[in-house]
Image 1 (cartoon, rainbow, N blue to C red):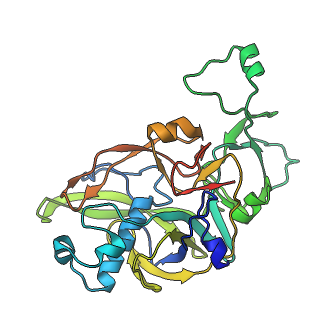
Image 2 (tube, rainbow, N blue to C red; image 1 turned 135 degrees about the vertical axis):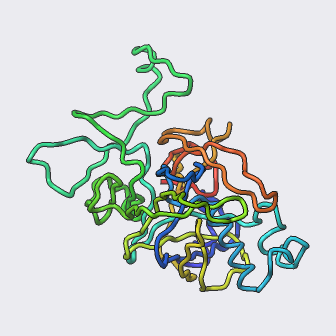
Image 3 (cartoon, rainbow, N blue to C red; image 1 turned 90 degrees about the vertical axis):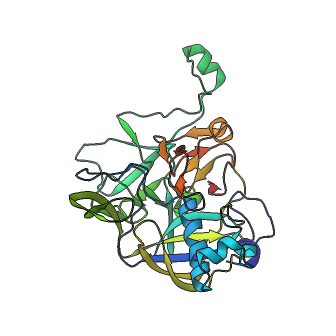
Amino acid sequence: MTEESRSANTNGHSDKKVIKWYRFHPSDTLFLRGSEPMVSSTSHETTQLFPPQLSVISGAVRTAVLAQRSISIARYERGDQIEDFIGKYGHKAPFNIIGPLLCNGSDYFVPAPYTWYVEEDKSEKREKHIVTVLESEALAPAIIDSLGLKSSSSLTGWVKQSSDIKTVGGSWVSLTEMLKGERTFREGETIFRSGEESTRVFSREERIGIAMDCNRNVKESQLYMARHIRLKPEFSIVWGVDRDCGLADQGVISLGGEQRFGHYKLIDPQFNLIESGSRHLALSSVEVTEKSAAALIASGRIVYRGGWDLAKQFHKDMRGYYPAGSVFSAPVDHCTILF
C-alpha cells in the first residue's frame, strides 16, 4: 500500500493522515465481556462480543504506550508530555481506531453486511460449501404505496427469494472478494459463517473464576463461569490508527479483560478501499444516536454496554450499539467503509 493510499480514510475522503496498521496475535484467549454483572454461581454469555469495540482497542493502545515509556497511571493523571500522543487522563483519545479487521494469510476479512441474506436450500442438489448471498434492494415509492406499507422509519430494502432466508450478518467475509462485487463465496475460505461450527473464525471456552468482594478478597465457596474467545491460530486482528499515538512498532499489548495479552506488529496491508458508493459497512459496533439511527439501513439486534470509567472510578452509562456488520447510508463513525 502506498503512502497516498494509506492517507485515505475509510469513508473515502482524503484527510492527509497516514494510517498506521497493526496486526495483533492473542497469546491465548480473549475475554471481551459485556455489561452483565459477574455474579457467583451464574453463567454468562454476552452477545456480539466480537469484534472488540473501538473503545476497548483505544484503551489498550493508550495503556501500552504508558507501559512502554514506564509512565505510571498516577504520573499520567498529574499531567505528562505523553498527553500529546494519547490525550489527557479521563478524556477521549486524540486518535481514531480504524477497523478492526481479521487477517488470514494475505487476505483480510470484515463483518458481513446485514443487508446480505442466504436462502435455506436443503436440497441434495445444493453444492456444499458454496454460499450465494442475496442483497436487499430499495423498494420504489410506487410499490410501497401500492402495497400500503407503513413504517416508523423509512423502508430501505427488500429481498427477492424463492425459499426461506436468513441474514449472514455476524459472519466474516473476504474484503477483497466483497469489494470486487462477488456475491458467491466458499465456506471456510472466503466466508466464515458464525452458525457453521467447522468454519467459524473463533470458538468460545468456558472458564471458572473465583468470586471476590470489593476489596478483592476471595468469597468462600463462590464461583462464577465466564466464556472466553479463542481465535483460530491462522487468524489475527488488524486495526489502524489515524495519527502517531506514540506506540512502538511492535511489542506486547493487553486487550480486553483479565489482562489477556498478545503480540502486535506494525504492518503494511495490501488492500485498497473503494472511494465511492452509497452504503457504509460498520467494522465495529456503532453507538445508537439520532445521527446513526437516521442513516441506518440494516442491523442486527441492538446490544447494550457500559463498562468501567478508570478516571471516575465508577460505571459508565449504559448505551445501545448497533453490531458490526450494520449498514448505513452515511459515514456515521470512523469504523465504517464503503462497499
